[in-house]
Length: 172
Image (cartoon, rainbow, N blue to C red; front, side, top):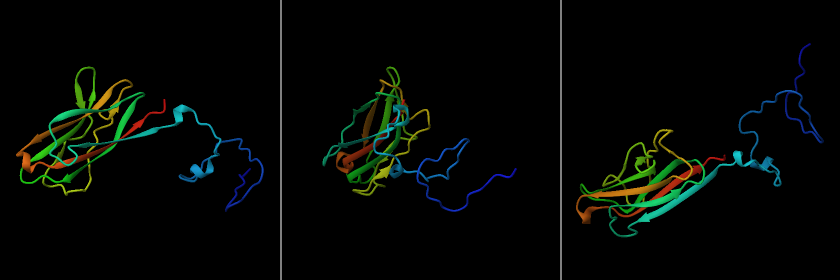
């Protein structure tokens, strides 16, 4: 017996019961379709954690490390941006890396260290290259730091580094 097909848009009042599998086209259900009182299991919720810091505000950044996050649950780095208030000149640069703790040692979370150099424009944010899948994850209880290293003449280094990172906590 051939299956019945409904073509076009229909509005139903009441309950519709499906006895088999239903497939919806992608992006047909959005947050406006979810009841305000709906409860979601914690495993289905991913928390985005924006972390912003300035290094040197309006002065030349100094070499050093800063802790930025301690993971409560498994957490991954999803994006990052660096913006110098005043770009470096000549051959001076500040290298920025995001590192995760791995039981006493640190390992990079970036695909490559970001260099704030004379190729950057003042007050323009540039994206960092996030590392491979395994590199970007922090285990629960581990932490991440930002490490800045400078090279070149102090007067030619970038000034006021704004560093913006986006982490996502697994909903487990």
